[in-house]
Length: 224
Image (cartoon, rainbow, N blue to C red; front, side):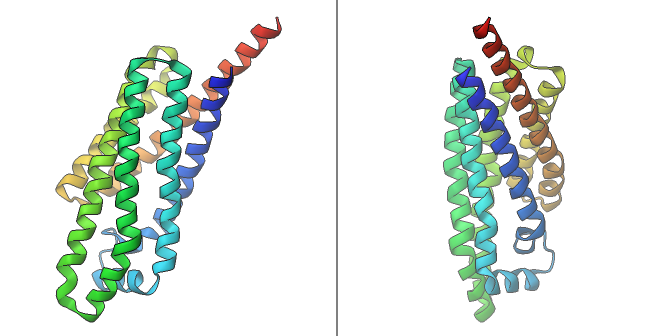
């Protein structure tokens, strides 16, 4: 029962944190990313609002840790080689993710200020950001997505069809996002996230609800 309660809490926590992170992206971070087509405004925002930019990344730091804890709880609940593989992949993904986010938080605002003073520093700014995108959007996301596929394929018979379908949606949109990050497609990054985030939230909600049901069933069986 403890394992299913842990999975229920981990799924709800990850869902909530990813929702907050999504809002931070939509409200704040988009101004400092490629989603802002005005390069001058993007650089000005990064140079003048580094505190806001860094604070808006904190939910994404928490999201990386929450997805790691979710897969830890999933491994503990199901106990199988596929779930252990998913946990290992997620741990590797979280390292890449947090490294990329540290680059964005620590280095990018300073490089933006330098560009404002010395325009010839633009290449360094763009290259540093590109490396961060490849680390998080391509590598970390690819590892997370492969972990999702491992978990979904190993457990799809154990969950309602809509939960498995949401997991497949996460897997497909996740690889779409990684491909978009690799080729540097801003529109691909945007639209893959439009599909990925709802699928992820739905999948984790389904996992949380099912884990709660299993915990209650186990508790009832013990009482009887």
